[in-house]
Length: 156
Image 1 (tube, rainbow, N blue to C red):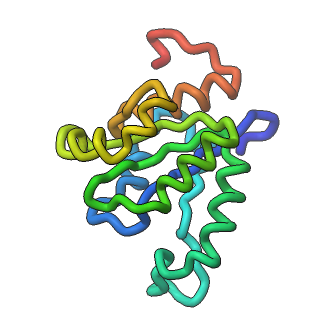
Image 2: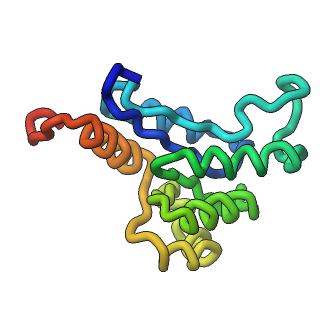
Image 3: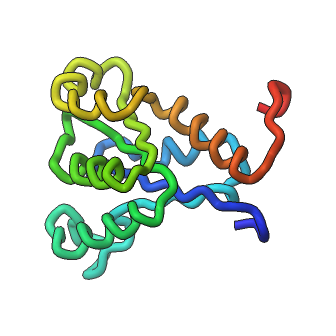
């Protein structure tokens, strides 16, 4: 964090095990000074070695994830029909209960039909669905605005 500049804390909710690292794709898509954003990656530093499966250690990761969501300013939630689980639903529900903005992220077009059915409740609570690029742009905009940058068409 730059001295005196607010740092936007972003919790990255969603499945830990996916064939493509959506969290890294999201981080790579940010269009702002990386010092303006802290990405909180659940399950990233689980004890008991690197081979430990965070999905099997809910007694450790659930309290830690809820605490992390509480410290976040915004939650980006990857909603996948292939890797759907109640963990993401808990993360999203907790974030909404804490009045945190939630940006639901899906892959177009493969997740649209299944996601619309499985996550119908979410669509009533948030105004948009995002792809990775649009979600990264929205977070970049939030971070730059929070840092007090004057945003013009030329600077974007």
